[in-house]
Length: 150
Length: 258
Image (cartoon, rainbow over all chains, first blue to last red; front, side, top):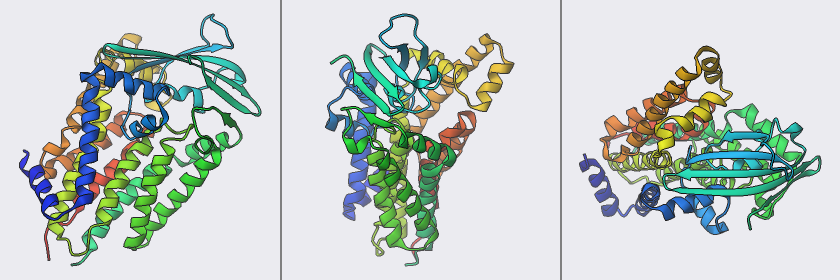
């Protein structure tokens, strides 16, 4: 089963295929990263912070190379203004939960999408969970977004 | 050495990238147009990474370049297209409006693989490139699916509760709307459980691709990804197309030296 793979790696070394070895190395790093998720709460927390937009910029950018298709158990609750009454929307979100704050389509149905909204974003993964709040105010001129918990 | 076999393989990878990059065309055009008319103020993103002009200025020329590189038999052009796509995907992965779009993640990895293929020296043997190219293709595709799978190794995905909410309750795709209209809530929930388990098991299995002989793994991945597209939402093809292109290209790499 491993004969083909080891033969290819041996060839890369013999033929000094540095690009091939680098690409393989990067893929192996990606695999280590993927397998760290279920094995380490720290890795899960780090990746959750990535999808909540709570990671230091360069670290966030580096982790963006890792796939996040339908990652974690995510929900977004959307409230009108500062209200704590029943949310206008409660929905499951795929990939990066913080996308609901920025992407067209995720604010349709919110009273025409104008005014200020508070987003409560929640993610769970095995023993790890994270909640983040955003405020987004939309007007004809544009949208102003701010994370509330900092 | 004749390069005909490589050209076909490189075109498969380019075609997959181009399809994923542009499709669904009307939806992407409408989405980017909507962002053009709405400015975004947020200190999380650098100004360049929240401007709509960046979306247009990166996405459109890259799509055009991929189209020309597919049509014109110039290796230099395919090299430029591969590297531009790596940079463009990297940039759109960081943009405020598109950071969650997984098409740019699969495009990035697929363009890196194409970049490797199009930079093989002419003197390199066909069989050698095929052996290495197939392992690298399986590694790239395996990494993407393993990354997708481990994020779902939770009770919520295994029980189907997450997929039930995401797909069977709220997804607007026609097959889910049809199921909502024709199945009871209980039947929908049961279907969601088995659908979710099938997704988790399939993605986990695809993660093992580098350890499976290429003659089985590559056709298996292509059939599996097409099956995923049919069973999932139509829009998923934009994410899968670059990987299907890489798998098809690696499968088509000529294996005999002349």
